[in-house]
Length: 191
Length: 197
Image (tube, rainbow over the protein chains, first blue to last red):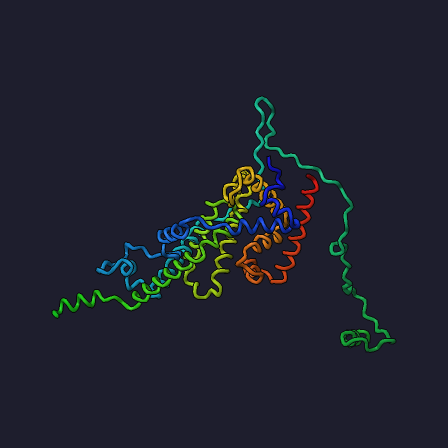
């Protein structure tokens, strides 16, 4: 039985450093010849592959059979113009957007309920009904705050209608024009 | 020529744009065929070095050329077609390998013994060499992703550090530093495994 070190290939790899053996193995694999007929098989595959790489290929059914070769009648002349393609693309976009808008406009957003409706209480059979009475929870009697606006309004000091004559204060002879008028009106009577 | 014949000939007139399209299409097909015959082998070896499965590698090559076919309009803008193609197939095989992580591991030793050149060795020697290669490859798989990618691409003699940097979309200095780290890590892993035996 041969020892692995007696293998000429293995000896070749183990004689060098570790990295050298790894690179030699990789080089050996990298130098393997390609199988026979690889190019022919690839060529055949390429010939059977679809020639057009466009996303939207024009269907051949729309082509006008004018007696030309197939490569020439696959696309009629009017389809080759750019504005026709642009118009077709715009029509497609319009249909898609319109359809999306139609769906969106028909679907209504459900409105969230603002009031929570409690289910009516159904009395159990054989029990007493509450006759529509509802229990109202009692609230605590807290301190009542006296609002300044609701406090006792100050009593308006209206001049009392007395029959006593207005006495003119000599210390303030000309306090106001109204007082003067009153004084003049009362003065003849006093005289 | 009668009037009907004139109308008919005018109706059947081939427009210039159609002629130009067909000429351009023929030119693209010729370019693509030249690319396939020139680089299919290189791409296969790149794919096989990662996938290590002949059928998977061939599928990856075909997918790479299908992508080229889809983007054949940009072929003229490609500066280095070889590096560009290697980059395409590299991304494909990495993606496939990432997706096949969940699959059970295949018997790499038997596959390597079948694939690798025997060179007039006996069956026992072939099996021993395959076992050694499988062990080395398992150590390669333990490397970090960045170092492993650089190490695998450096095994291709037709790729220099600038082209590796272009494939991996990194700088050339990064390629050198990663390769240095990968070699050190590989040496450590293989020496550690040898010391355990």
